[in-house]
Image (cartoon, rainbow, N blue to C red; front, side):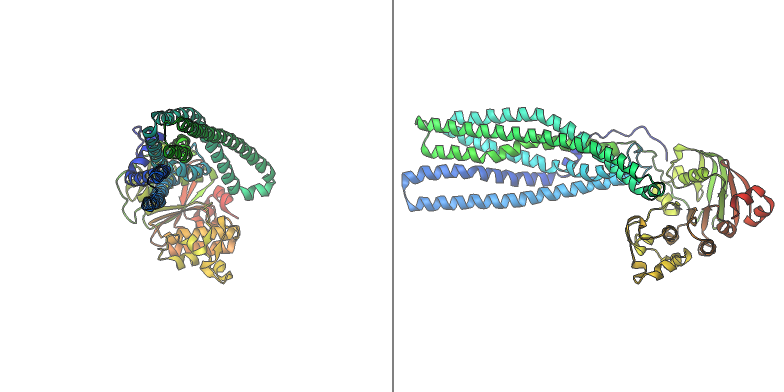
Length: 567
């Protein structure tokens, strides 16, 4: 994995072009159907005018029957074209939104894939939901814009055939309306982008508060935290009101301008009919078109607003998707069942850290400083990519820099001490994919059997979000069971038993050693039970390994070690 500066920027316009290009087929079909719908809608008043004109001349039942049949065809066309046109467009819209959600989520869930440190998880969540949906709306906006244009053109042509002045009035009025609204839509785009940013910050604040809710209650900081969120939320509310005000002004202006144009067409047609320059049938057609054209004009005039909203959301998605990659994954894969080697790593508090865990060995690291343990876990979990530290980490004889993140995580699992518990069941938390072959053994080894036995549903017992209905020790054992059930070649556990009692901890230590026999295992802990179960113990002090022996030998000969781990 190597850093790169060749990542091409992907601004919002490029994201919109990608969305349009991927859905060109659906958009063409939707445009044709919606154009047919608008043309049929516009044809309705034209048909009424012709019916009045010819029926008054012929005064025959045959002409009346043909007229009624023509209206039936027009109404059927309107109904079916709208139904199937919107079905095509909304399906494409929903599918495209899903694609962008997955893409943004992939960047957010793979920290080494994109450098998105400037965005919090709550902000990425907002981008992956609201912004992805609004960006995908461009799939509907363009066909509706074209179909509305079809209606305006048909109306202008029909009115021009009656009198050229009516057609010119529609064309000039439409151009004037769009020119005014295009200027107003610029303000909507900038205001919407700012609103989305503030909503995202509020979402990020909520996510932070939920994660820290227990500690906040512990020291009484929940009221201050609530006040902090209230300030961020109020800021987002004010911006939302500003956006609503701008949208309201835009909608009101569009409606007023459309009404003025419709009234102008009706009055002009009435004046021409009064002067005998157009017939009664043409007057009926003109007045009808003036009423019917309100809808496509309204839709046509709203399109610039939706384009600007889609552009603003696409720009926010570009913050994630255009972020440069932290690393470029290598093509290699580690040898199965291989060893783990840390060679001269300098990162954070680590000062040229060097050690090796042989294939099939059970090694424990006793860190004297918790920060050093956290830095080591970050390196081994690839949360800190190779370019972020000096030195080399090898897995199965291959440097991490030469391996893809997927290959690393397929062979090496790092289970943090604060692993998340998800809403679902005990079973889905232990084996999310449903493919583990060692689930019963993992449950027994982690001493989760008593939790399973407590509930009639057993492993199907419902777990609330973040394990709210479990104790701290139960959550920790559930997390450990999940790590053991993965049955990876190399397993790294960070303080897996800090929340369990001494007796349970002793049993867990023996069970891990038994279950992982022949598999490479590294435990970073100060637990005497786990240290004693390990084949050997490495002492991590001031960022380097200062001692190495069995737990009992270190207890007997190293007073500092004895003070650090003895309970």
